[in-house]
Image (cartoon, rainbow, N blue to C red; front, side, top):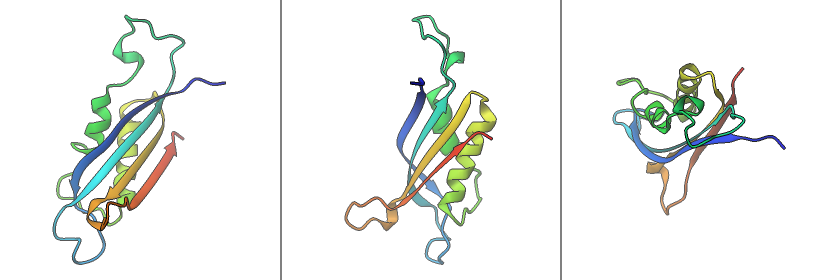
Length: 123
């Protein structure tokens, strides 16, 4: 069996300019974003293992918040997920695979989660 290390940030609520219909395109929409990043695994993680042997969780959060460009309208939430994934790949060569789940909160009528999940491996 192969070891895996997956860092996760779940249920970030982020306002993003997204949508294709006229009622969606004038204001940011609230999205719920969750990110899972698979990293290269070290042989061991001792108590004194430095952060460089893993990744800062805040990098995942920042990819879904601070790294999204201001004023850019993403027609599809797939493009938002793609931008987050590429940001994480560019940040760190130890990131092997990223999965981004996005839920469009304005579409929910009875608490259901409507959205997409995009997973990509480093090429």
